[in-house]
Amino acid sequence: MNDIPFVRVEGRGLVDARGDAFFIRGTNLGHWLNPEGYMFGFDGSCNSAHFIDEMFKQLVGPVRTRAFWRAFKDGYVTEADIAFIAATGANTVRLPFHYKLFTDEDYLDLTGPGDGFRRLDDAVGWCRRHGLRVILDMHDCPGGNTGDNIDDSHGYPWLFEEEEYQRQFAGLWKAIAAHYADEPAVLAYDLVNEPISSRLANADALNEKLESVQFLALDAIRSVDKNHIVILAGAQWNGNFTPFSDFGKDPNMMYECHHYSFGNPGYDGGRVAEFAAFRDKCGKPMYMGETGHNTDDWCRAIREDMERSGIGWTFWPYKMPVRSAWCVFPYPEGWDEIVAFAKSDRSTYAAIQQNVPDRARARAALERYAENCRFANCRAEAGYLQALGLAVPQPR
Image (tube, rainbow, N blue to C red; front, side):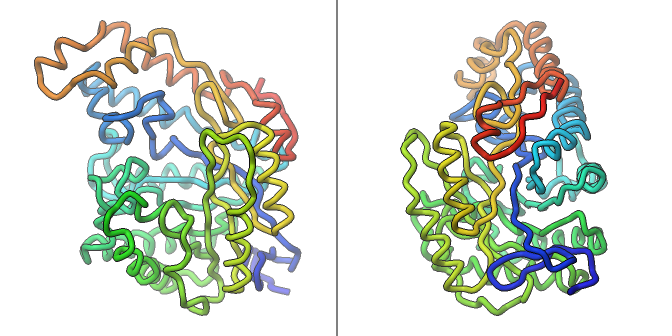
C-alpha cells in the first residue's frame, strides 16, 4: 500500500493510493488550448492554429480576432463542462495544450508564460473538485513534433533535429512538473502527441531519435517530480512502438496509442490486439489516448475491445460543432461565409480584398461561435455516451 495519493504504474496496469486498480475512462478537451481547423469546419490551408489566426485577422482584423480568442478560451471549457464529464461516470480528462502558452511567443493573442499555468490550474482545480484526474498533454511541442497540422508546426518535426528545441522541450516539462509535483489530481504527463508523421520521407531515421528525445523530458521531470506517471508516445500517430527498447528506464512510465478508422464504420480489432501485445512485451501499461470520430456502433465495439484487453481510454473529443463528440453545438448563422473565405485564395492582398465576405456579418458569426460553444448552449450526444458505457446527463 502506497500512502501517497497518486495513481501509479504497477506491472501492466495502474493502481490508486489504496492499491486498487485504476482504469482510465474519459475524454479529451481538444480544440480549447490547441485549436484545430477541422473543428471549426476548415481544412486545406487553414487547418492549424497559426493559419486560422492569420485568416481571422484578414477577416475581421487583429482587435476583433483577439477578442474572439479571449471569449473562446474563457468559454469553451468551464467548470460546468467538467461537472458534466464527471456526471457521466468518466474518471479522467486528457488536456491537450500548446507549448507557447508557457513562453513569450505569440499564440492566438494570448502571450505570456502565465497564461499556460492559469488555464491549466483552472482545469486541474475543477477536476479536483469533481473527482476527475487530468493527463497533461503537450500536443504542440517546440519546433514541431509531427510535421503536420496537428502540431501547429512549419511542416517538419524539428524537435527531433535541433538540440535547441530539445532543451526547450525538456525545460518546459521540468517547469510544468515542478508546478504540479504535489498535485494528485494530475494523473500523468503526456510528453508528446502523435510524433513523426507517416508522410515524412525520413520517418524511419527520425524514429530512431524518438525514445531518446522523450527520455530527455522524462529525466528533466524526475529531477523535480518523483510522483507522477510519465507517458511515452508511439511514432506515426501514436501507432508504431518499434522505436522503443528501454522498458526499464523508469518504474512509473507507460505508453500511449491512438487509433482512428476514418470512413470505415466496420470495426476491426486488429490494432487493439497489436497494442496489447506490445504492452505484454514491455510489461508496462498501454493507454488509448485518442480514438473515436466514427459511428456509435464502432465506438462501442472499440471501447468493449479495449476494456477486454485492459487498455484504458480517452475518446476524442469532448466537444465540437455538430457531430461525433460527447457534447455538440451548432455553427452560427453566416459561418459558411467564413468557411468559404478560409478555403479561398488569400495568397495576395488583392485576393484577400476580393474574397473577403461582409466583415460585419463575419464579426457577428465569430461572436456567436464563442457563445454557442459555451456549455449552456451544448447538447449531450446520448447515443455516443451510451456507446461508451457512460451515463447521459443533460447539459441543461
